Length: 138
Image (tube, rainbow, N blue to C red; front, side):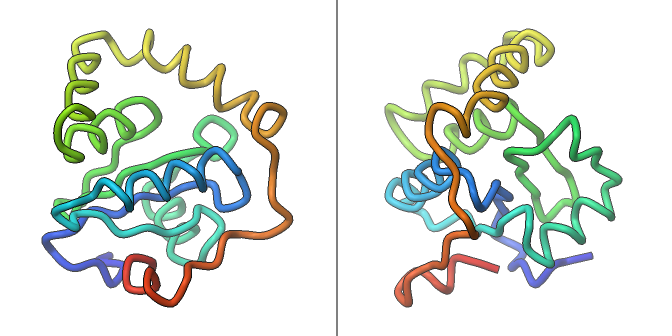
């Protein structure tokens, strides 16, 4: 259940056809100065395997997951805030919102996730990483 992920990395699973999600991945890549993250689309073979292994209900969670080598998975706003925490100042200040209970944070997160295609659009297929970014994707 290692998914070809180096032990010192975390894996961000994202909706590969969502324009907002793809923009977010590009943002994380740009600001991941310590090279902590790797990426895969939820629609990929690895993404589908993680969904199966963790018994994730994709009708309730369909946008972002953060998988850690300790075999833990974070969902929705918790995943987003844990990612921000590792992106350095000032982005890491967003982690202060972790003190807000997840059920409250996730109401806002779910509202954006529900409307992301309408507001930001959708691709016909998953993003293909450029040759210089291929090593960041599984």
